[in-house]
Length: 436
Image 1 (tube, rainbow, N blue to C red):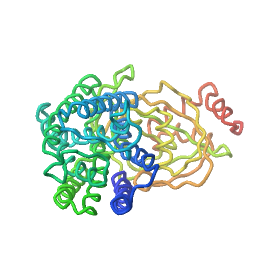
Image 2: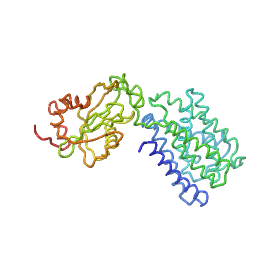
Image 3: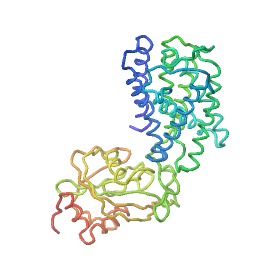
Image 4: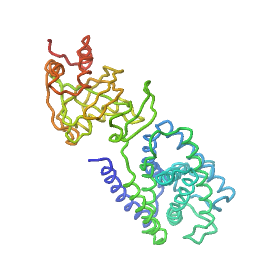
């Protein structure tokens, strides 16, 4: 199952939960302690955007971006409550959790931030100019609030004492969102200029905004806020279409590096491999069973690089902000269907370049040795066939040019055999190879 289909199932589940939750929130009086549930839901809705941000710019930078935007949101909301600027006078109820300094619920930091990031990410799919991105993102963020604010007023999350023409929300509120949204999106742009992401802006950054707008659309529908509901439906449909059109999988990206293994760029896997493939990160692993037999795989015939060629157990490419060991475990699970895995790094500095049919592999490729336990379930689009062989049999194969073993597996096998390295690594894993 591809990543986009998996996410479609997740979103379908979120949609069902949102419908149920919205129905009860509109039709049942919120009980004491509901602020705990509300706070949990705010964090739950923010999680997909945070997850996507960690894959985009790394965990540390993602925390930094959320912190900057969250603090900004809390400061602006506090100023607005005290002064009435820029949204107009309003007050929060107790339903969103503990109020910092008695003014703004702490959850606001996590409620506004994914909306701002989502709006900016949508704009980034279409606009290369910074000012255009900020303008388009700000307009979209304000459209989000045309759905969110009426619903929140309806279920008494907050109130405007003087009321307003749009389901109790004054026009000053939306004007305020235009101002504060523009500043918030400028903060995202500034943060990006410091971090300098190597990945394209992923549409997955919109995932939380999509879920949040869907939820408040359901609130509007059940509450009879028909204009807000229609706006929400239009936004949800547009976001889904944008998501499907602009989606790319993080694990489908190759990381280009310099000679010191420092990332310098990224590219989709198929586009990255050609007659002049640039140096990039990879990994290779030799998997053994408890009997000391080596797993070989025949690469799927549909692959662009070395189709139908027999090779070592598994190879792949780490994602940009992923450790090589995590990438190995992920790939073994996805490609071979094996979760029970013990591994050890054997050749940390292995590097090679090879060519077949005009396609070049050019990789910094650490080599691991591992032991697996359990049945194989190879992915047919990755693996055509598998077999288990004794190590000495495999050595004879790699030393026979007619065997057609992949060039990297040949080089790696000889390095592993040199000085008894493989046997030593397998002993660390509790496996002993038969003597020569």
